[in-house]
Image (tube, rainbow, N blue to C red; front, side):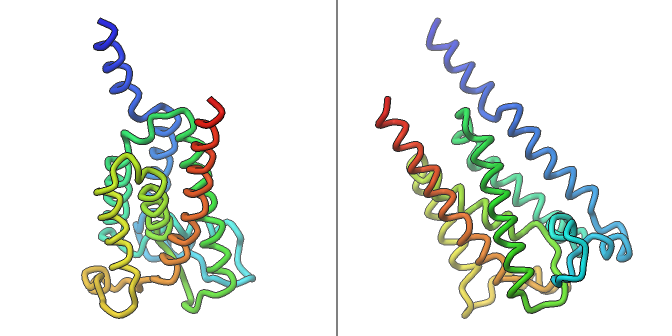
Length: 205
């Protein structure tokens, strides 16, 4: 009886209410800023200079060039949730996911503001790359095979010698590989920090 109850509890709590609210908010933001028209998109993307409204450095990450771009990023976020859902059943998961997203956003925007060479930026893919990097390091012990495959895919996507994103390029989207790389690098110290905190808390028990 106790065994069946514990199984039911684990299944029902695989993705807690705070995380459901967090991810639902991300999806709703992408839908709100969806590319309904070129003029609507132009209101929210960033031009990567000091003379624009600072809120554009947030809205730009939820703005997309076209519906294909939007659909791929929404699908990517769903895959991320599905892959790491079982690993996000602990109490601190909401805090970890929120901090990682915020840190990736801040570092990516710092890069956009200071070093980015193109005129505009839009899309959730930077944060998405960072999340996959965070998840593959943070939850590596629980599923090394999946995490190693994710790391391999990230390396293949970010390497400069072979083009692996021709489909996106055919849609007329400029691929900001440098922003993706910055997002991935920014996720690494956050993942390591939470791994260290988890190890430290276990030692104290």
